[in-house]
Length: 292
Image (cartoon, rainbow, N blue to C red; front, side):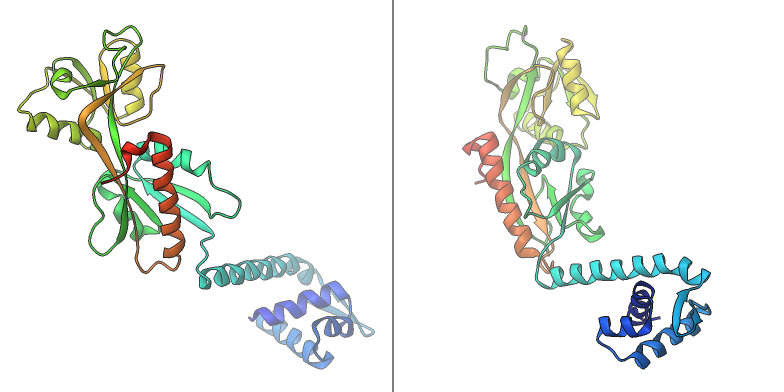
């Protein structure tokens, strides 16, 4: 079954006669009639009732008409999408990143996109598998480790790690805190499979220190909620919630990297979006997050 014969069928159904349909399609009447009869044979359906030179849709034809119309519309959309792909345009941009990065970095950036930008889609990935998402259909992956060999990429930002305390905490008047001071306090930390925790663990080990009192959470937002209740200091990379006061943890940060397939048909568009995302990070968090 060819799209051309479907177009002939729909044209006759709309025009009411083969002659009118042939004129609209700029084909000869015998050619249009022959193609429609071929379609009927392929489908095993009598689509029209022939009545004194006019054609009326049969019951089968009335049932088949919306299906044919939908198929032709989908074919037109597919052709338009193929043309966009051939031109290197990206109709939809799928971004894969850990949940925290999606919430605090990607989502605010997406709010700045305009009508001429690709339609965004996001995919939450655990950190260890984020770059593998490119092989599963994502266009852009954002992780906290350098991208693997074989991919194109760019450092995005070096974001701070924050220690959050409630307004009444003795540290609420400070803007930063050392790792040495932190380890002696009750800490509300992400579990070790999260990059902020790993970064803090490395800093603690490098300073030959040890935690005194640690409570682990799989949700940075929950850790902040518990900190707001006065039960400890939340150390996470997320933006502040629950009116907590942020202190930058000295000497510890999270580096973000963007990666994409080098042979992606819209690699130029993806790179341009990444450059805008890097500039957005600097505008949002300050020039100090510019990667070295």
